[in-house]
Image 1 (cartoon, rainbow, N blue to C red):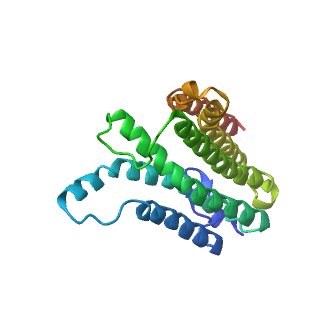
Image 2: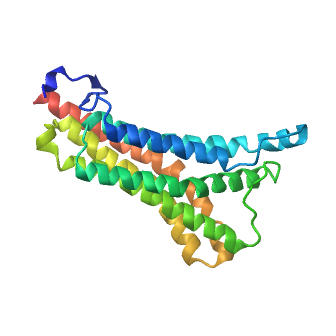
Image 3: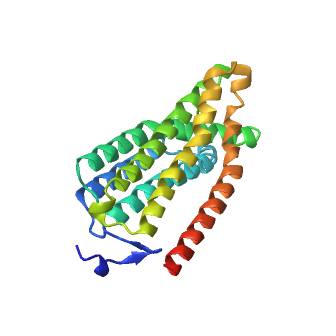
Length: 241
């Protein structure tokens, strides 16, 4: 592989420009996950009232798709940058697919419940909450599911880091790989915290564990600022060298 001839995006040499069978299979699995979101809803509306009711499901559907696309893009970025298709890569990608297909239902239910809560019941939730145990159970299921998904993505980048010499990663590429490892761990943190709180705290308190996701508003800017500062310091050091 002639690294000098590889296309470059954001300073990273793209080693996976050719679409692999692994990437094709992963894309198909993510597309199927989106399809599951569609067929998980009600039947096709047969009158105006049913149509208006189905439209209230759009926010949770859109938010669920956005989340799935975010995870899909993480795998796409990994695939484009490194182009790996060995046994460990296939295994981790398969685990990611499994986690998404299991995670897709609680994903939709959590967003539906959230929009129903903030709209005062105007945006209906298909998940019927009969007591606080139902809601905390949903947060536990969703939180651990999302945490596992993020850990698998982080593991893909961590495994890639062990291939530094084989892939001939330069210092900037090594740094960006480490950033992605830390990024997916950071993304997993509020979900893991929410799941633990919902699991261990009394149900009357654990039912509020969903608000742990507001931590993103705090940790995301901090992570971005610290990462950009370290990136600039690396660039300055490389230029001086």
